[in-house]
Image 1 (cartoon, rainbow, N blue to C red):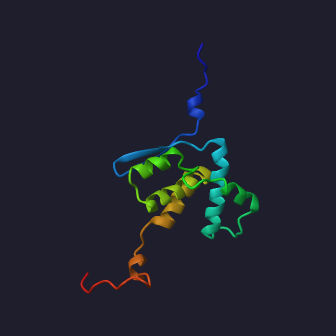
Image 2 (image 1 turned 30 degrees about the vertical axis):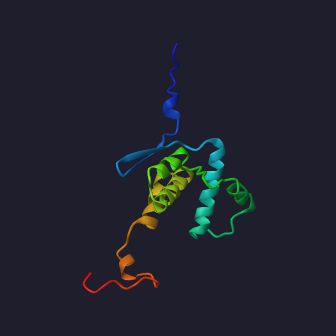
Image 3 (image 1 turned 90 degrees about the vertical axis):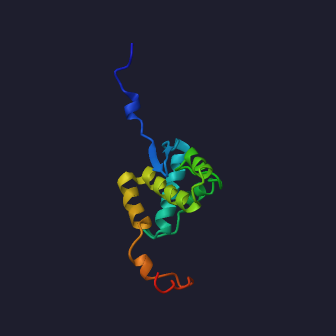
Length: 138
């Protein structure tokens, strides 16, 4: 006899990232990776000065368990993105999004991504000090 419970509907859905004609499916973090994702969220909020630091020792200890090619928020999609030739900047931005998506929810991740990554009119008004001035007429 089949169960009346729909267990699949209880499961957290994948994060689906359509990008450049491809779709990357990011599975929810495992129990072990969830602690790493939360630690990354703490580090991100401290680094972005959203909360005052320093990063607590217990959180830092969890962060130190993350290897250089390990991305607990993106999971296997991290390697898929690298193989697809996405730029490191794009992967980094998607990583930030995924960390906050899993740690704080979609609305928080969307809001933060808009604040961090949406180009602004002022970006062209204040060029970097080291950059060359744009040629006249451009």
